[in-house]
Image (cartoon, rainbow, N blue to C red; front, side, top):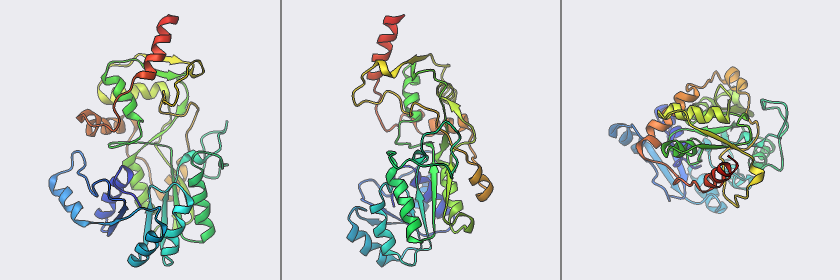
Amino acid sequence: MGGTRFIGIFLSRLLVKEGHQVTLFTRGKAPITQQLPGESDKDFADFSSKILHLKGDRKDFEFVKSSLSAEGFEVVYDINGREADEVEPILDALPKLEQYIYCSSAGVYLKSDLLPHFEIDAVDPKSRHKGKLETESLLVSKGVNWTSLRPVYIYGPLNYNPVEEWFFHRLKAGRPIPIPNSGLQITQLGHVKDLARAFVLVLGNEKASKQVFNISGDKYITFDGLAKACAKAGGFPEPEIIHYNPKEFDFGKKKAFPFRDQHFFASIDKAKSVLGWKPEFDLVEGLADSYNLDFGRGTFRKEADFSTDDMILGKSLVLA
């Protein structure tokens, strides 16, 4: 379910390389396959020839039931599911399903002073990811063989969330980087290619049956440290960092900073010990991979918008 935007692009390639028959269920609005930066024409053509497509809207529950039951898939990778009611028709359509592999989020954990988050920690039924939490509960209640991965912040080439891109825009423009409060808030990022490998490792893995795994990078990093890491990855000089108090500003509906303003990171020990998985990318290497294969080639998802920066910097100049 999904597969043409970010995580699924990398995951589908790994699955095809492993010899699996892969069908992407999408609305067909985006090209079913797209050539990755740095991918040879031969490799892309080989991959494209092996991908099948089922066109439809996953919110059209009757179509989902009829089309999936006709195909009789053995495994479902649900990369873009957000609500439990989108998953139930899939389970109904595939009574002989061998495994349902779900992309959840570490955003389901209840905010805590005790970190990192572990898979057994309390969850927040009111979080903005509550639909993912309800989906995990549905999978448990249905008695199917399921596995759920909970990434923290994902980054890498083709990232549609302005995570590293937000920093790269400012670094390229030679602008100061506005960071809320002290800049010492600790967070965690995981590379999309490492996440895709984890998704492959849980496939058909008895140790992954009915289990949740946090997936992210090995190290935690401060917001200030992330700004510096992005600069290093892109070959920019160390940036000027401006700290500000968000409570002093009214940004309207605009988001002045791409991360939640708190400590937020999770333990990946369970995935390491149970799955034998570990991240291949350290953070600066991974950011360099993202920069060199995406932003550094002049491609990005969102145009630069420095309007909130200008509000912050304008006030900083007055105070100075």
